[in-house]
Amino acid sequence: MFDLGNPQYQYLIVLPVLVWVAYMVYKSWRKKKQVEFADSDLFKQINPNQSKRKPVIKQILRFLGLTFLVIALVNPKIGTRIETVTRKGVDVVFAIDVSKSMLAEDISPSRILKAKQILSKAIDELVNDRIGIIVYAGKAYAQLPLTTDYTAAKMFLRTIDTDMVPTQGTDIGNAVEMALSYFESGKEQNRVLFILSDGESHEEGALEASELASENGIVIHAIALGTLEGGPIPIKRNGVIKGYKKDNQDKVVVTKMDPEMLQQLAVSTEGSFMDGTNTKETIEFIKTSLAKMEQVESETEMYTDYEDQFQWFLALALFFFILDFIVPNRKTLWLRKIKLFG
Image 1: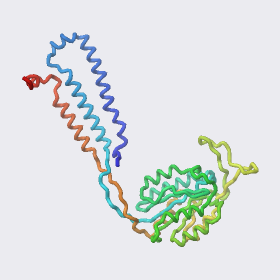
Image 2: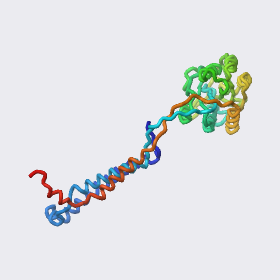
Image 3: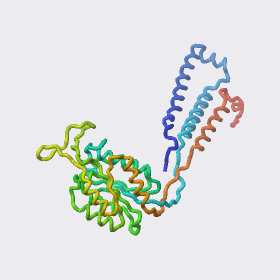
Image 4: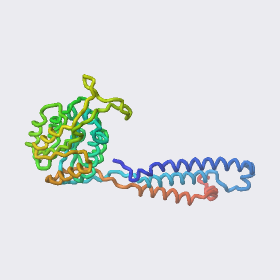
């Protein structure tokens, strides 16, 4: 595996090329000036020991030295050491509602963006807990399996939108059933599911699924997104609102947050209900809920630890700079005296 220790310096790799181009321009200018000063035969007589090849060789050495110096500054890392680690924490799954009703902007900036904002900040608070992500609308889909790779979790989080699930609707029950497949059998003391939704469920079976979750030791916490007054569902193109979703009678659809469904889900598993309008309070709610859970050791994981490689490139840069210092500009006369073949 490969990584960069200082990626902000990678653009400096063009510096050796610019130096080389500057040298070629200077060499061309100098050659023209020499022609103006004297012809080539006279110049050889004036400076008989001047070498034509040595300045080019020295410039190549400087180019290589500067190149390896920049690479050392970027500090490439290679994963060469694999370690076994055990983590002690909670298995937490977030199920995010991505139905079209989540586009409503009755809470700022919108229900779906508020959900992503909450989840992103919640990930920042995790330490050794394993996190999984589920997205659902008319059907639930596994977005991210349980992992401690929080960077990957944030990467997958950025891809979430209301167009990723082709089946429209809001089947909370299917999301709960999907969460059941995330958790390992035999470990029932550290399982928690957070549902981020406006509560509008168009499918039956949510309460039945929550009862099954309770039987398997899964605690469900519900985070409501939206207002009781509700709001229309905007239709946007390139970020500009072109209109609002309408029903069969050509009336604008107003979607309202339904706290009753979410509260029933939470109560049935001895979980809690939270209004997600205030992001800071919601993050505190998530932290407090996880702190109450019993932490257990997760399965041993293998991970790659990157090792610095800058020292090798720094040594090469120093080597070429020393060679540049040693190699003279003049001809090496003693080499001419050596006759390998009589």
